[in-house]
Length: 72
Image (cartoon, rainbow, N blue to C red):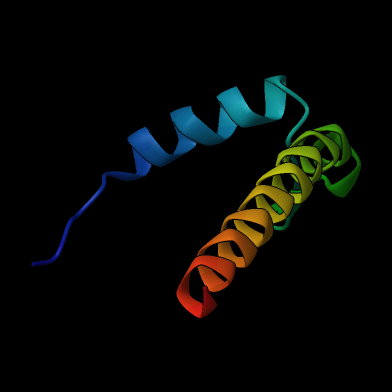
């Protein structure tokens, strides 16, 4: 299934992302080139990494518990 999106809708979403500081847009001739702002995503990555480490640790603990029960 192909999902088609109108240019107007894409522009609206890009404008919202630009206003939030997540995307930067610059004009090159008749085109507008958009790129992701890495700096804007750093706090998000930090937050996600915290939970990634937390759940990785919990899953490793669960794995050890299961392995110990299997060998008992």
